[in-house]
Image 1 (tube, rainbow, N blue to C red):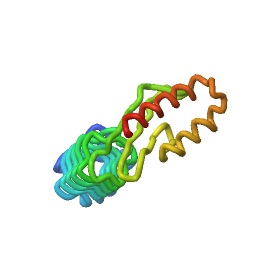
Image 2 (image 1 turned 90 degrees about the vertical axis):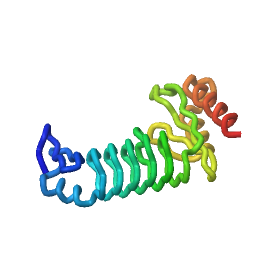
Image 3 (image 1 turned 135 degrees about the horizontal axis):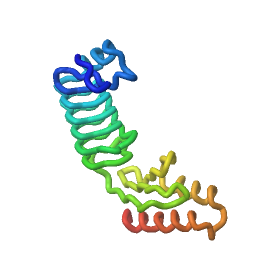
Length: 169
């Protein structure tokens, strides 16, 4: 284990931030990786490469912030994915058996950020800021947050909800 540029780096190029991990902690996490290479701040994974901040994953590559996933690739910016398998280029998934159909909006609402609608076998779900839930719950959240039907942000969200309903019909 070598300290290079504030990172503990093992023999396979996996690394852990030295600000948050002692050498002993990094060595312990390194032992939890089975045949992983060039991963950053991961633990308990196997046969992964070029992943960041993942845990309990296997056969994944180029993923970030995932847990308990397998056979996924290019899931960067997944933020909070879990229990997925055979996914690629995903965002905000959980319990997926394949990449869900999804729709990502342009930057909208008071946050001026994108909203993601996705569909799996359980229905249509939405990820918007810290909101994560089904479409009906999201519609209720928009209506409660913006009770004035003429509010520009409510109108933006309602337009995107309609588009998502058409896409997933």
